[in-house]
Image 1 (cartoon, rainbow, N blue to C red):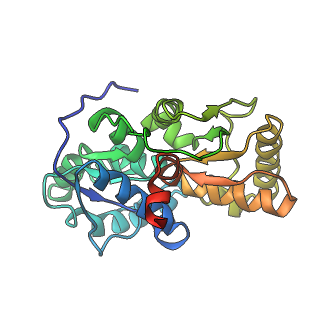
Image 2 (tube, rainbow, N blue to C red; image 1 turned 90 degrees about the horizontal axis):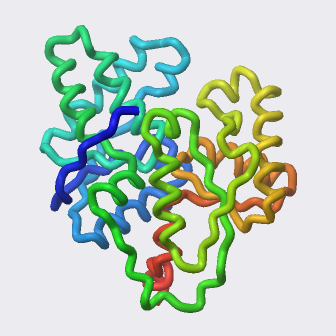
Length: 262
């Protein structure tokens, strides 16, 4: 993966929430906004946004993926960073949108310029904002042991695991542990879980068993598709494995949730 050069911290950013956050895990999107606003940024949310096009793209339908992605290109007109609380969606936008529009003289340059402004949330917090969470006033939170899960695309295209490791390891009272199947796919794979449910089910069972064997308190991830898959399967099995998006985890462990309740 090519080393990326990071700009100075901006004053304004866009949030591309992803369709899964919008429809299934809105709290993760809200907590992502809170993390960014706490660092002094103004967060803009273009209401016309929908999907990055990854489901169609990974299913071998580039024309449909182009149509979905094209509807997003003009929503982020200002030269602000586009923050995505999903490593796989960020990877789609940064690495595959320019390829989708490579032959389009109008949309191609737009996609290429936009791709350079796309950041996964953890990456942006760590390398652009260089966050140092103030936890001096955080008290009363019990210690937690967590395992991280990174989607296959996020791990390989955006290096999201490294960003998550650095942020989680900086939190007092939090112990990150690794398990034997951490680098394996959870079985979601977008439409893969629909086309091959038996294989997908076996993969997520292995993932859950391996994570639970560590005795962790919860599984944390920056990818909502994986969280939905692992969390639902764990509940179905009766496995003691709560799941939480990294935005919500960071917000909660740095006192944000307590301040909301006060």
